[in-house]
Length: 110
Image (cartoon, rainbow, N blue to C red; front, side, top):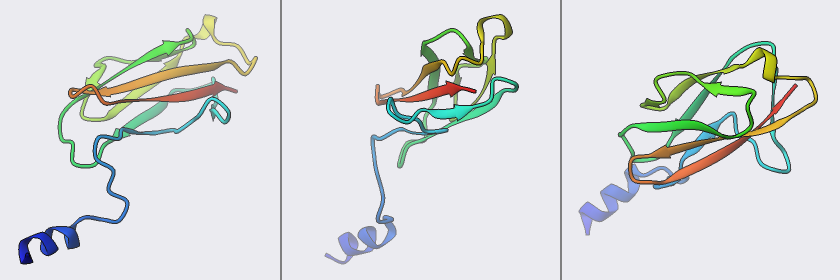
């Protein structure tokens, strides 16, 4: 019993195993606004996970995840000049872990 209580005391109250959290975080109804004038850093974390992640644009052509696409959770995402416009396009970037848990963030070009 003491071991179980000790482990529970070490787990923070918002522990979310198997949930990939992405920054910037956008939803279909509230996409994350990102300037098309410069690149941004995409960050992924998952409680209790220490493996690699992959990232890719799954909808849209403006934002490109730079190589390597497999990392411990951080990528540079750059706009592709000729395909980007200021028409507030919304694109989707997906991040997956090696256990096939995934999350999608919605990015609105500004």
